[in-house]
Length: 118
Image (cartoon, rainbow, N blue to C red; front, side, top):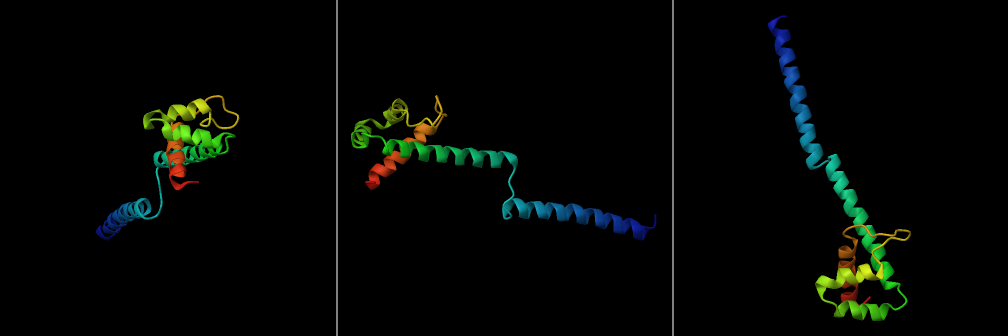
């Protein structure tokens, strides 16, 4: 192999390595690329948010909504999740058992709705 060919191969190899590294840096920082674990976390958060929204809607659509809202406000903040669980609003339609974290997220949503007066 001639020295010129060897130099071309060396520079070509490092050019490919450097270009790949720069492409990954740009892609992950500004291009919106994500790893599978980040994508899974984002998906889990979106599912929890949608379940919490359904929980809040079920709470607000209850037949005795005004009484339950007053009871909710009169309950200590650390016991509000239990109130949501007892009412069954944290369970999705067709589910017998609620998913972990829905009642806590639901409490936050109901508190926000009650504060705004909706």
